[in-house]
Image (tube, rainbow, N blue to C red; front, top):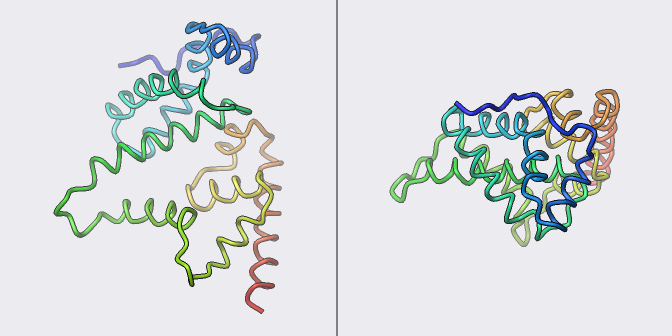
Length: 191
């Protein structure tokens, strides 16, 4: 079994410094130390989606390999948030590969849920208007992320706080304000 919960190393060096060392100088050790800080989060995301410890461990390794290629090609403002999205997308793709079969016309309930969530934010039919989607897009970025993670992905205040590196009270405030703004927006669109 992989050691996912080793003590943190290089805590005095910021994420930005370690990331810059890898991107600018090709220091693979710096990227390894940076990834090690967030392995518990990555493993948690993988375990939640894949629901299998072995597959989650394999995914953690595959995500690191993917990270070494992709991080240089992207402008990364918040490594933790960017890595979370990378891990989630990787695991969703793996999960879908295992779930879909060419002759399977009846998708499992979990798969329908994930697909419906993603499609609601990616596609809109020409004459179809979705007031909730429109209102979500009008929220500020922090409120939108918190509302989506809390209501659509069932993350706790604490988990969201860790992902955003914000105080739990601020996360609670983002969710409450986001909910209030959604309610006001929906009322204005339906009247």
